Length: 277
Image 1 (cartoon, one colour):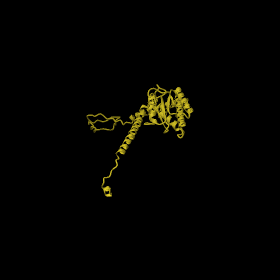
Image 2 (cartoon, rainbow, N blue to C red):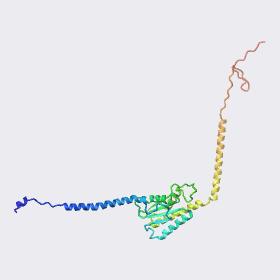
Image 3 (cartoon, helix red, strand yellow):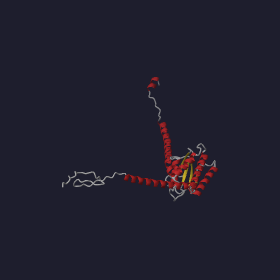
């Protein structure tokens, strides 16, 4: 075949259909598991805060530490000290504390989880729940926010403002740069100490100096109230005496001479001429 004939002959185009089909199949095989994994992770993140499978939803768990991640494996003595103080507080004053350790939280945070567990485990408000997230070092405290300071039925219930002040002082007294186990232990012990001080102060009778001071304040207040009433009565009386009283003479048919004491030299008409004899 001459070169001219080779140039005029049709060229063969390679067939790329099989490789394209293989690439399309590989995309399908990779994309489907990837989408399935994303859907599973998203569903787990949405269900976890509501189901809380690791924590009982009904009834109260035993007071103390709830750790399923081995947080205290390196320092079991610290966990023992915290547990003993929690048990003693519950025995002496009926106040329950649950310390929950989580490695990482998905779809929620330590504060929200602590409040959720407190509503489930302590609906009567006689305690609090502490949640510590080890991964982020976030600490959440779930407490009763509707405590009545005047209630006497449940003596283990602390008013909300007292619990807030106690938690604030306990957290402020601890160095946040401590290692996670030491940090959790320091906050727990400080919080329990503050609670024990509160219960001791509430149970102690008022000192004599306070009783005398209260009596003096009451007497002084009553005296001031009496003086105020006397002053108000005197003001009303003097204001009524200071009024200008006006008197009007009765109307007469004809002018007449006014007699004493209304003015004997005053007359409203001429005297009649003298009668000649």
